[in-house]
Image (cartoon, rainbow, N blue to C red; front, side, top):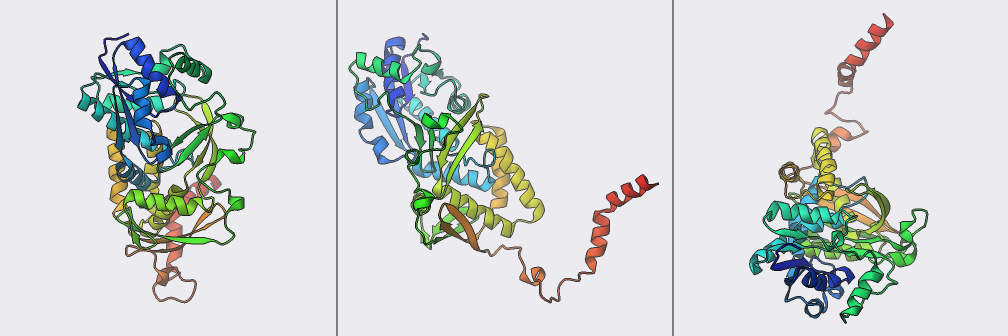
Length: 401
């Protein structure tokens, strides 16, 4: 093992990181400092975390509140790009990793650590996301990934390891799902979901009501934006995090935001996951509806290209890169126009935009009307069409000759 004196571990209190603390001490013979990020995963996951970390062998445990920073500095900028990975995934896990890893580096600097550690497996995307951030912000620190070093391969191995050392854990060998939660979403993997032919059972979902059991009466929610940022929900001024919490509650009660997908992981394999993003689904749908009011055809097309590229940048853990900065800058320039109000109807798992208005709207009823108007001469369209299709006409004439 390398000559490491103090390690800061990204700690969740789950089975993996509970075992990692004693493993690091035994195999590296060093001090272990636990770091936990509050990104809105809920009080239940954070309750007793400090005591648990110390009982597992950590010398310190730092719990850092990142909720507002996460929503305002990572989620909101991502929304302005319109990024959706592979057409469906709203990037919930991906968006949380750079803010967590950045805070972990800051704790390492604060306590004088010379190494960073995470509990990501060697099969997943998160190892890349964490270590790419470490490389960008702290290339001088050693990175330790126990799942790529130790000989334990299962939950049973980890439970036995902790039992041998009399370290308590609430985990069990019968845990069905692997879940990751934050203010934006919750993900579910494992269990019956490993068979893509198996429909998810009701016990999979935790953040949203089953659409079949949702209220029979629709509910409407009004979102107000100023230069791309959500400022009010139903007329109430809220911070970015508070607004998301409110949207999660309202949309989750109507079963909005569920997806069941098979996605391409960065490391090459496909994985099946179920995701719940109630507030995020409403927020992104409202934002895109407002964009259609204020961006012209060419601008919207280019913003869509930014979104496609950015979805891979975010998914692949490339937040702290020049490409990320350029894409966000481009999206921010378009976002300056995104001011106005959107009404979204929530009903039985669906979020439908029903009303929209903006002081920057390019929509003109005078031009768009099917009734009589004095602003548009339909005869002008003939010349436009001839020029627009001129290359096709020339090619057809050539082929006829």
